[in-house]
Length: 287
Image (cartoon, rainbow, N blue to C red; front, side, top):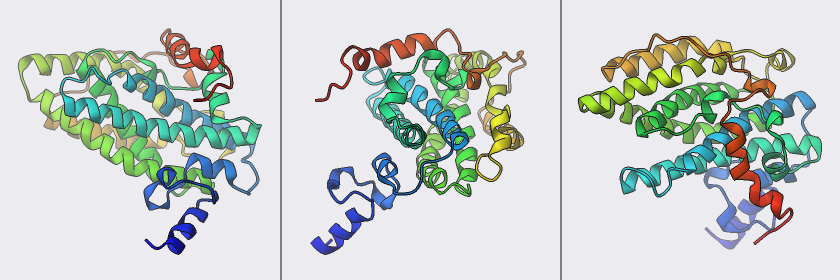
């Protein structure tokens, strides 16, 4: 690329001082671009919706990052680390957009909110468990996020649509990764199939919360996606994957989950304590 074309490319991100290492391939929107956008900040309802999406991605990223150096094989260690980084990238974008509406940064929202101010789903808060549990949670979330982002690329809010377009490409890989592991473990040994069945039974109670509509969605017609509209396709695709994996949907009761309203599982407090301790102990510190 010529110097002139490179300069033009960097300018297109809204930050003429951006370094090449910070440029996302494909001219995708970055968190830094969102902060520098000259457009008016999103309204409060849009910001709260972005917060929902960002919190899911942030907590899932924090959970998956615990697998780094603990993967069952080197390649899987790298794969889970990359998925965690993708989710962290989605979280940064959504939190940057939400924070701009409230005069806060992505770090303010990630590190300096209390537990009841988070809006994450209970499913992403659940412990990693063994590898089968992480794969089942990954399959549930990848199916959900893939459908959600595929619809949000048509959102009337251009920033939500742009963030979703970038995220969709990455979640497509997450879904393929989770599906292949589900097939491999479900049709593997009796032990691997047993652990997958146990993981399905353990995590299924948290599924209904993914598809619960909230009053916020009524305020965002054309911008947000009603989660309930995703359920039928999610069920069909999941059953197809489980059928091919010699697995079945478990018959277990659902749990009452109200993470969107700040009522969380007992696990979130421990996640936040670890994630926030450094920023809170040394506020404003950089390196």
